[in-house]
Length: 291
Image (tube, rainbow, N blue to C red; front, side, top):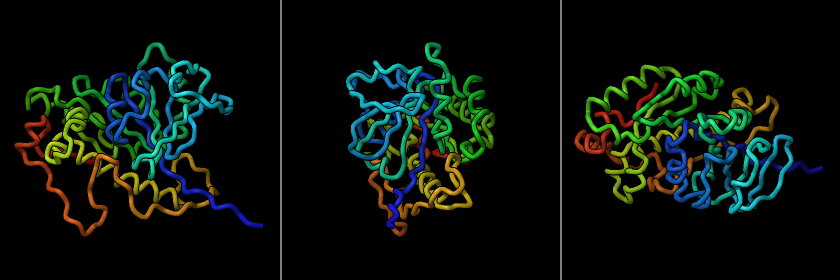
């Protein structure tokens, strides 16, 4: 009797943070386009789980039942009764991982159960915190409840960093957040997502916005998670022991915006100069830093 080959298990990376931290902008940046219709706001939805493919979108309710849905009527789906909305798109980043866009954790009009029940599906998190009010107590409280296996593979983005207008403020916020989150993230990056979107093919501005160092780290993190998933002795957080071992990803595929060689022998771009970083509002030498 023939045995069907199981598809490789891709890492599942959640986009999380408080309301208006920049999750939708980050999703646009990573995927090269807006995954949801213009009028749809992800903060009003249940978690949106995006995978590579051409399947029709569907919702999954809290009992596990599925129902095909229309992209034009996503906001009609009752959040209290829905586990997640599944979307399938053809873009480079989804070749190597799934992205799960969570609603804002601090929305007073939405029960925390709406997103808490999806946490067991998450392998790593990109947490976005707004620079002008970075790492609020409410964020720290949610993060404290995360499993260690998730936290050690997660990334913290300090978004809207260009809103801090003085070098003193930028250094102060960056150092404070690093101090308060020490040991809780694999890496921390200050970033201006809008500047990254506006950079076009200008790689100096792309790197100076903070996006270059962050995406370089993200590619490495996805590769690491893919290899962890391929080891029976080191399963991802939510893969039960005994799950068939998928083949490891041999080389990560860069998000569509990043046109960089995947050959290790290829020359790498230089990091932005101190002057370029300062012009973009980044602390000198702080393109990315590990916790």
